[in-house]
Image 1 (cartoon, chains in turn purple, brown, red, yellow):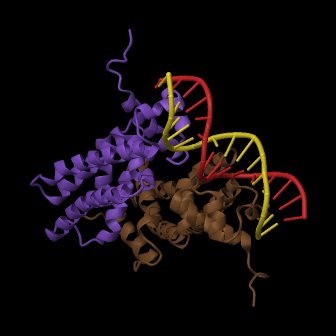
Image 2: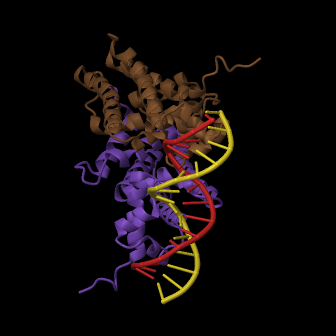
Image 3: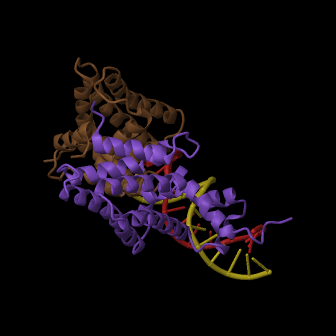
Length: 193
Length: 193
DNA sequence: CCTACCGATCGGTAGG
DNA sequence: CCTACCGATCGGTAGG
């Protein structure tokens, strides 16, 4: 009984690579590390992938797409800015939670991409952030939010969301909705009694 | 007129290393990179430093001390939790602002330390975070803060503070007090109008 | 998917 | 602080 017919070796390589890139970082992960963890010889990797950077490329742009899917679902809704913000927050945290290793790549390892992919990736990242920014701007204009300094609040918010992958492991008892709810509540109403 | 008598080559090496570690990451920074940027031959580095990791070690623990100094100033004060929190926030941002390269090492590169320094560093980092946690707990107990979920709010807050080095360059027109004030205001009272 | 191997680069040392 | 050099490891290829 072999599983080789349905088994996708390339997917396995990417999954293992995601995990190693997260744990050790992209430059410190060798193809020999990767091969050992996959269970084949280093040279055999090249039957499935073109290069080390090619793996990074595929992981980076795939997880970027996940974040885009999440925010696009929110953008099209015709609801107040604060409700949009809440959904965007929970959506972001869900992506991070469901793809923790890939999220680490999305956050830290993409910078090892070479051109033109580096620029392409940066653009995608900026676009994603822009959608969050638009929600805040809309909320300010319509009087839902205070006249906050977006230059400070936007990165603060995104930072708080991005780092959830570091301390909130999937095994945690706290769900993404609960985390999103708590962060949203803090951002909206503060912790002041 | 030479400055060689007062010039500290070791300090220069550490400064350059900080910058490279931040830009390229520790593993991707070679001793040849470092030497070139210092302006000497690679082998000459070893007249001033013991090893590559030794540089990382010195940078990591020195910046950790900066963060400790900042929070220690706040801890000894006999003031309400919300005022303490504000001072801790501004203090943290000031350290990040004044030592942006080293802060990047404090945040991301320390994980390449080997034992026993890795454990030692982790302990110091946890202690620093614990001081922030204590301020939040004190505020909740005394009824200054709401009954927030510290497990979520604490890392969210620290993440927001830590990432300031990424988007807030020293050349920025926004000062650390202004950033601290804005983040503190958001955390305390929220953005809701 | 493997064996065998390549040139390049790595951190670091010897000796002056 | 330099020249010269070391063994180890790197990403990747040839050929089957």
